[in-house]
Length: 151
Length: 126
Image (tube, rainbow over all chains, first blue to last red; front, side, top):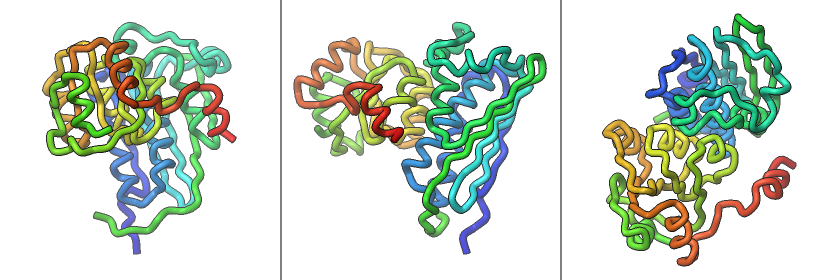
């Protein structure tokens, strides 16, 4: 039987912690590799998590990124207690950004984050309440995992 | 093109990955904007960037990028080098600017990992 390890995980992300930006993406990717998820799918998941991670660090006080690995899909949820998004349609447009210099120095903040998350997801849902926070749920589907021994 | 040839063409210093100089890489993507790398770069390509912070290494790892060339002779922090070592991503450092870096590699046969974003992007989405 495959191990239950890496089937799900919750990672806390702290706002303005620029040094570790991308760590959650790297960690989850390493875990999914051990579970035998197809590589192309892992790449899409890693991009989605990277961008949501950058969003939380850039705009929120804190948040969490969770994932649940199912037999034929993965669900990713990114929640934060940030300022929320006033106009979601606008935020989803490529090139629209409210990023400051600290974010741009990381190589982000050009208004590609949410469009990238949507592009790499099979299902993409976003809800936001100004003053309270934002919640993004993504699903990436695949044709089953390639069973292999956990290292 | 082997990583060793890339090193020669760019008169580059191998910061991480002396043991991976036989690695074959045939395509590349050049950008300082990591969101564009995440959106458009392909696995197995060479990333040419002037962004010398850990996010470029983590971006490369997310996409299974083969190696990174840091251009414009940037100073690389210990943290950057440590993460690249941990994630097993070779790092070359060249003093050439990005235009020269790309041009020299292209002249020697390196191709873009995609040519035009919207065309191939739509094909992939279908």
